[in-house]
Structure formats: structure tokens, C-alpha cells
Length: 253
Image 1: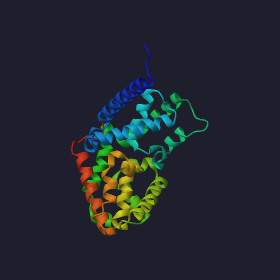
Image 2: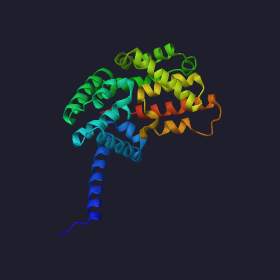
Image 3: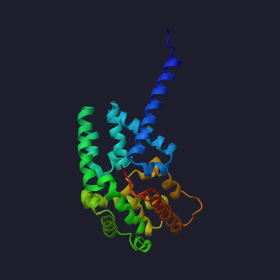
Image 4: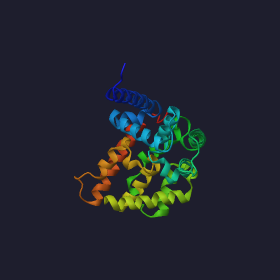
């Protein structure tokens, strides 16, 4: 029997699609609340990004690709360039590159430390941090636009994560927030503190993460012209999103 190249391509696509479907289900099994709010299409985009990035860093084994995806789920889609997780970048971008087994083992070990210290059982600590943001006073954010006060705000919202990443990294988060506020034309109050909190809790790459499509949509919403109105809209959209993913009482499984 002769298998034509077109048939082979169809077979390969079928295998890839089946694998992607399995990973979509895996995402739901790890973080159902976020995935249900994001929707299947966004989760599928997230999965394909994860597959391509895992392959780029040298992961070919299915289990290691799944691990890479879990890191993206729990740490953020750009975890390997996020200063909150400097260890991930050091492991992934080490020269010379380790074997995928060694790299995966190191990543897994560091992830377990992070989960114990920062996420808590079934994401309880991360869930509590999101709820603190949800019940926080908008006036408090409006009074905060200097670096040190914003760092104090981050520490109050997620003290475990603040202790984990350290003050220098918190400073990097705030500096990045100032840059994003300028780029998107937000009012510094509450823009700086709000962007800092969002990237602190959702990851440095939250704006380009398909799971958080509401975020670039809010930042670029043409209905809001003034910096103050854009910041107010982002505040409302952020609180609506956090409320939607925390109402189940369990963020991760």
C-alpha cells in the first residue's frame, strides 16, 4: 500500500489535534475556574502556544510538554522570562542546554517548592490573594502610585508570594507597571498599582495570555478616551474577572 504525502500530513494533523485536545482537557483538570471563564477557543490557543514553546526549549516527550504547560498555567504564559521565576529562565536557557529529563526534573522540583510556599493546597493561598484584591478599596489604589507604596500594596495582597520573590523583584514589577501605564495611556492613579497587582498575580505576560483576553480588550477599549476613564474601566473589568474565577472557592486542583 502506498501512503501519499497528503495522507501522511492528514494523519500527522490528526495526531497533533488529538494531543492538543488531551492538553486542553488537562488544562481544565488543573485550573477549571480560569479555563471555564476563558472558554475553549482561548484555552486551545494557550495550549498551542505551550506546545510550540516547549518544543523550542527542547521538550519532545509528551510528559515534559505537559509539565511545561502546567508551568504556564500556574506561573503565567511567559514564566521563563518573568523575574518572579528567575529560576525557570536559568534552567531553560542554560548554556550548554541540559537534557530534557534533567531540565524537566529541575523545573518540577522548583515548581513543587513554589506551590507549597505560594499557591497552597489546591491554590488556597493564591485564591485568598485574589479575594483580597477583590475586596480592596479603590481609593487605596487611587492613593498609590509611588514605588515603595505599591510594593507595600503587593505585599498586603499576597504576602506569601511577596516573601518568595523578594523586594528587588517587586521593584521590577512596579517598574514594568509604570511602563505599561505609559504605553496604554492610563491614569497613574490607580493605573500603576492596578497593573502591578495584575501582573504580580497573573504573571508578567498576562496581557498576551489568551486566557486573559479581557485584559488587552479593556486596555484598548476605544469607548474610553481619557486616561482616568481607561483606568476606571480596567478596574471594573479586573474585579469582574477575579470575581468570576474565585466564586467556585477553588482556583486550582
